[in-house]
Image (cartoon, rainbow, N blue to C red):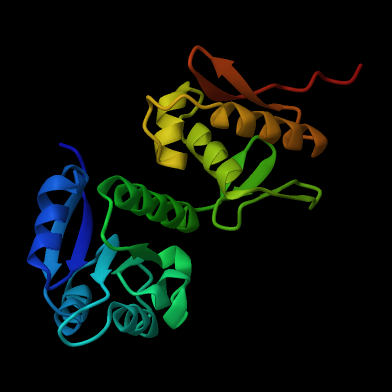
Length: 233
């Protein structure tokens, strides 16, 4: 049985709720709960763990941006997206950050992309430190650390590539899967984005002295391999 993440939708807009539940495709990936006001959503969040929250800016008892701040004051760390028609929030007003605001009217494809991006960032931030070859990999800090103490800072996309390829444990990961999991794009979109980022990551690893970590091209994807150094004569 497919695991469904838990989503909370906080809105008093019946049309919006129906769109999210029936026409967005989110029900295929999430178990969706609904709350019609901010106070009810705060109470529900205390009783149940949600992986992501969507909050309408216009709620009966508070603004969506106020709900966002109250969650953070209560040390609730789940990703929250505020859906807003108000220009004051589009640029990250109300101190919630523009990356946490989605403009209304909501485009389903854009919303699903933003939700998946939020989930990926949260997943990487919560991931435990891993050992890749002779290096320590910290996805949350987007960093590789060598035994000698040297550090290599990665970009978010490079971190995602290394994380998903390492999780595959030597198996090839199709380009379509990497596009979906890291960029949130459909597999039918023609792009050299993955190839470009893999190339840059290869160059970074080589310059860092991690020649033993190989990003190999396999069919229509990539796999992470390790090359043992030859013993000194």
